[in-house]
Length: 353
Image (tube, rainbow, N blue to C red):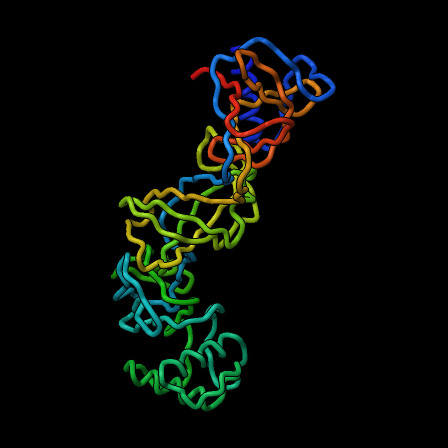
C-alpha cells in the first residue's frame, strides 16, 4: 500500500501541475463508488472545512517599464548627457549635441521631422499641447494644425532656452515620450561623435514595476487587474495589480525548464513607496479564486481510480475504505473535494513523511 500511494500521489501532483489528469489502475469500486479495504495507510491527515484559495507564488524582478532606445536627433559631438539613474520630466534636458540641448516633451507619437507652419498630424498636436501646458501658448487651439500661432508659441519657447527663434522645431530640439523618463543607461559618452539613428540613451518609465514569467497552466491567475502582493528585498510588502499580460508563450530563462511561460507585468498601487535597487529579485503572491466553507485534503491524499476520476482512502475504527470524490480548486498544497458521506474531521490516508 505504501509504495502504491507514493507513486500515485507523485503522478497526481505532476498531472495537476501540467493541466492534465493521470489515471492509475486500482481495484474497481462498488456500485456506490466506494471500495472497502482493511489495509491501513502509513499515515493520515484530517479532512478540513474552510476557505481555500488557488494562490501561487512566482519569482520576479523589480524594475521599470517602457524601456526604449533614444537616438540622436542631430549630427555632432555629444557635449552633455543625462546620467544613469537620473529622471527627466517635461522640458528637461536629455542630452546636448554641439552644446544644443534636446528636451523632453510628452506624447506617444515620435518626433521624426522638422515641424513648421502648414504641417498637420499627431506630432503637431502633441507639440501644441506641451507648449500650452508649459505656458508658451495659452491661446493655442490644440488641433494638430501648425498655424502661425503655433509658430509664435515655439518662438517663445525657443527664446526661453536661448535658441534661435525660428518658429520651427524638430528632432534636434525635442524628443517625445509618453511621460517622465528614467535614464537606465547611456549609449554614448561625452566627446563621442553622434548622428541621427545612433543610440544616445536607454530610457524607461519613471515608476517601479515587477516583471515575472508564469507557467501557461497558471495563466488564469494573472489576468489584467488581478490583485497581488509583492515581497520586496527589504522584507516589506507592497500591493499592486497585473497591468500587462504577454500574448506569446515561450520557455523561460532556465535551460532546465522548457515549460511554456507568459510574461507578466505588475504595477504598484503606490509606486512612490517602493524601494529597492533596480533588477532586485522579489516574490509575487497571486491570489486567484477563493472558495468559502469547502472540504479539502492534502493533494497527496488523492488516489487515481481505474475507472477514471479520483478517490480518498477514509480511515475509521481501524479500517480503511476508498471513496470516490469530485475535485474542485487546488491551492496551498490542498484540493477541494466532494463525495458521499464526507465530513470535516475524517481521517484520510496520505504517504508517510
